[in-house]
Image (cartoon, rainbow, N blue to C red; front, side):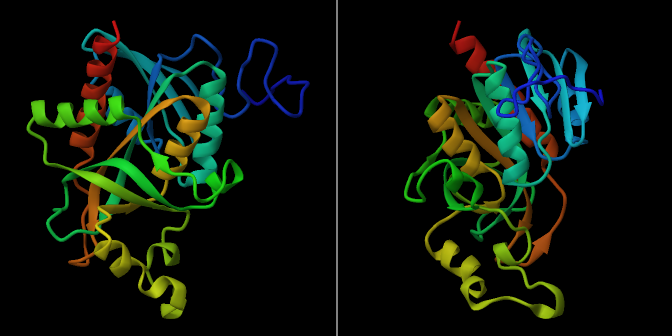
Length: 262
């Protein structure tokens, strides 16, 4: 898929609305799309479905669509960070996707949250700057109530360990999340970030939710986010754990949403 015969530099899509980066067009995807960052997570998501097939793969954007417990569902990976996610959301909206659920990983900020637990984001602190291209910094980043409720219900019905609250989204993984960089570099304006967010009751740190919520509000997209906890910042621990149940929560939430909208 190296060729792309678009003629409009502002839209960069073909006459049949094939999107430049995602390589998808209207009709390729279900109304609800799960969005992991890691392209390899797509395979783990579709492994829980009844049936699936690949739509496209270009750069970090891998798209599959299928059926989960009788309902249509799709997934598209976005890669790491807000700029990559912005492309995915914009092009998914161009092909008429109406609901997007982030399926990610995060670091917990509250001591009661265990590695492997899930965090469902109700809203997010906008520490990333991609959303500032869309709207003033004071504009809130808030998830859609119906998607958040569906994620909570999915966790309850499947006995998954979860927490609900405010997330902080940073466009930086290292210094921007209060991690010392090379030669222990950490500027003063980030030295107390983790402690300040923890005191404010923020549940977790990740990189994409706030942009998704802001774009969702502007573009009238239903959005939500569930993340597996890989790190405990209070205990300075890290372990890759919980991806499978984060995926289950998102798949089940999709089923709940689709069935409730019939």
